[in-house]
Length: 423
Image (cartoon, rainbow, N blue to C red; front, side, top):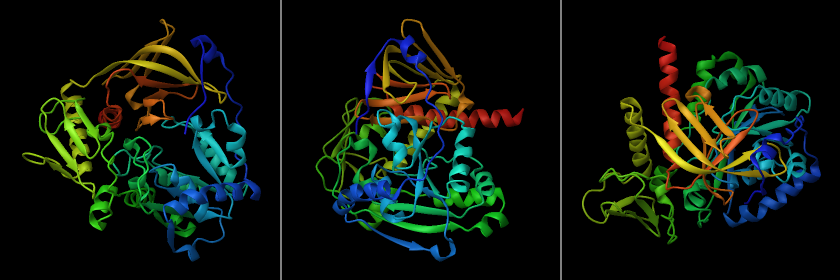
């Protein structure tokens, strides 16, 4: 999938009129059917099936529907499982670029990832109470990098109590293995299934504390797709299965060098020390010589997180890279405004560029997570920062692991939050 882009001067991009806020609208049966039919081709290709439980306790709706986020097929899965019931979808605002009218007709309404948004809560309540339609959202906000759950916003339990509607959960199986983000949109021959359940009834929401509700959500969003692949012996034997693996495993576990690993074909190679690992058909890594430090990819990724945390603690963490900059000001196009420099330290992000016209700073406490993506809309690996007024999409010109920036932002937020509480 691509996005409409336009090269304009920085002044033109920032002067663009902000999109008018529109309330979510229940999609018509025509458009619900259109989405369902369009999704059927991909779902047939993956031999999709699903099961359900406790739905007799869910009532007639509307519902708040949560779903884990692995790939684009998630939306197609929802259209199959929920049809013909109407629902609206919380969608990232960049998904509206060049197609706002269509997106709204199929029930999407926009928000900005990892930007505090009171309007979003109001829109969700409006959809449930006024439009009498369910709301589908992906609380992780971003696709998983390593096949494990990404952090959820805190105190979602407060939201559940305020909305006072049953909560459904759709959990997918195989969606990540079919199209992992790191693999550059190369789809694999993997069956995909899902399970729909009534996670919480209205009565259960009211009787439980916010802490208890948050724990239920945390437990629900605990998964490991690579571990499940190995346990179920799900075969992924495509010859490109390791392509792009350096996007996750950017730091060599043998020599500790960053930015020199390369995933190609079925192998991950460090060009600094020469060590090579083969990725087998069950998603496990095996060193071709010597010790295999981390056969399980998420274990390697967790080790990288530990390394980032240590850099933050000893003050050595720093990202400083030249970037191409794009700005999202409205839904007409993604405006490419020139070059700049992105700096990330324990003080947060600092973006400068466009011949000195752009100077934006973002505190570590701005958000618990970071919108970072691989091969974003086929433009390149990307780091997005910004606020309600404007978002800046930064495409590193150098070999910069955007996964490290995401790990650093998450760990830095936790650290600063802890320091703030201690004062």
